[in-house]
Amino acid sequence: MPELPEVEIIRRAILPYVIGKKIEHVSVRSLKLRWEVSSEIGNLGGATIEQVERRGKYLLFGLPAGTMIIHLGMSGHLSLVPQSSPYGKHDHLDFILEGDKVLRFSDPRKFGAVIFTEDDPLRHELLSGLGPEPLSPDFNGGYLYRETRSSARAIKLFIMDGKKVAGVGNIYASESLFRAGIAPARPALSLNENECARLAAGITETLTDAIQQGEKWLQTVDQKTLPAYFHVDTAIYGHDGAPCLQCGTPIEKYILGQRSTYSCPRCQS
DNA sequence: ATAATAACCTGAGGGC
DNA sequence: TGCCCTCAGGTTATTA
Image (cartoon, rainbow, N blue to C red):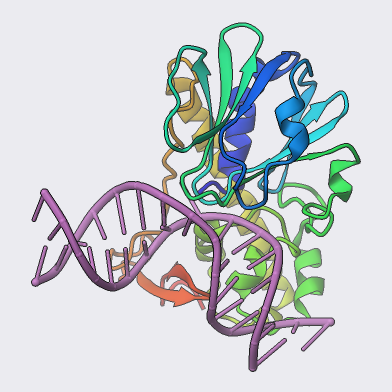
């Protein structure tokens, strides 16, 4: 279920435990994820993890011979466990690191992916089409206005399209639109410049706030084993029927593009 | 070319 | 307790 903030928090959390660490060996217990686990992954023993970066919801592990790309899908998770820790049904990969730590990839629904590429990962077919990072200067009201001119689809679906902007998922899409005061079903091209500016700011602020919440949560987690995700404090997602925080009108829930959508009928138009 | 939908997979929770 | 149904914070392949 991780979106950009959750992936970013995982990245920051594991950073001190994996940077500069050698992978002793890799246990691949399940090959069938969203795509088959690259054959190179099982042979990463001896490689040192030089860096861990993020692009959208993808984690990029920089290794001497290339890059391991990890996506967590809907139910994926990374944890740091002792070497003695027994693996469960959904613990598909273990990266045994020098020292006592194991970086463990778990994913009940298997929508995640673990891919290796020796080329520039940003040129990889999974990443090359991604839109700008929402927390970079490339993403702003002007960009959103230009890109929406030719799109009649609902604005919520538009901002969830990774080709338009990377990393915005179902929860933060609803949250951002609420913050911007824009109805999720509005055709993208119906937004004017001012509304696009508000929405871009809404997305940026929503994601930044969530990352800050995640940072706080991290400090409360004892050994940073990352047993779970932090719980995001949402203003509208999951609050159907409850009074809107701004005006008290009951929050509505409906389906848009096969996904649950929440909005305030009065504050968002 | 763009946009709506079907599909991948498993578990949790509610109603009966 | 068990069965059936719906839903779940993602993304691509297929269809229209």
